[in-house]
Length: 93
Image (cartoon, rainbow, N blue to C red; front, side, top):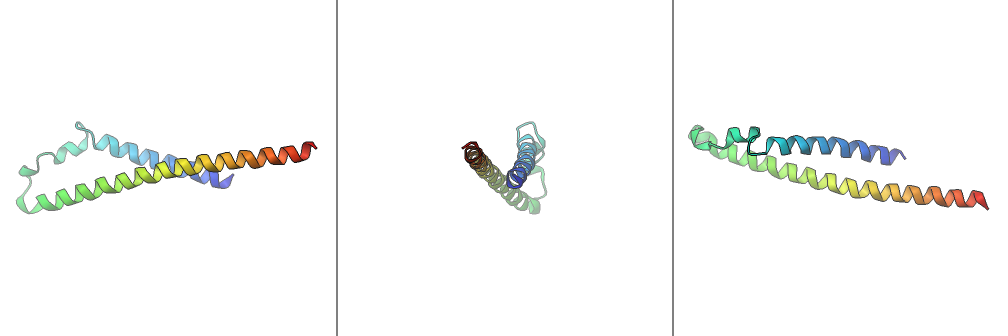
């Protein structure tokens, strides 16, 4: 059960982080601050674009990890239930 609890904690943290990114990344979110890169000094435009691209890729990876943890958590829960049921059956007979 400790593994399932740890997975649940990790999923909760990743879900919160991904939700914050989704709020930031909306058209009316804070990402809009970067929508007019032409107003930035010429030397800072490319680094801003690269940084935003890297941030987006990182959050896509975090979302994928969250999805993987959800699948793993469900699998662990199913196996824990199967073990519990099997143990219960042995004690009944």
